Image 1 (cartoon, rainbow, N blue to C red):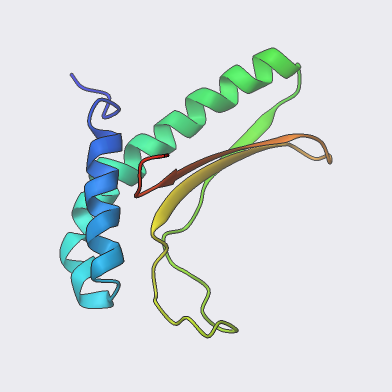
Image 2: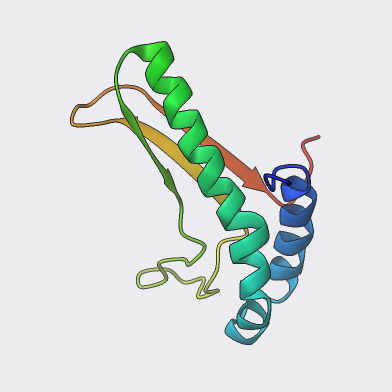
Amino acid sequence: MSDGFADMIATARTFLDGLAQNNDRDWFEAKKATFKSDIEAPLKLLTELFAEDIARITGAPHGGKVGRIYRDVRFSKDKTPYNTHVHAYWMQRGETGPGWLLHMTRTEPS
């Protein structure tokens, strides 16, 4: 049984490349099931696993969250509806403290 991590990065890059070229509701809705099953679900699992590891390392519970694919366009000149990246973050629960961010973009680092 696959945990979904093996192909997540390649799938995410392909998906995000397509989204950057077709950042509209029709394109996204046609591909939403792929996003949910092949990118968002494995990223949520990764977030849960990392939260456990971070808590073990720091001695404090950390909550993990997956960022939304939908952009807040209310006050933006750029009205494209979707982010062309995915991200997850971890913060210490109930207090201010260090946080961690995982940010996956559509391009490979140079």
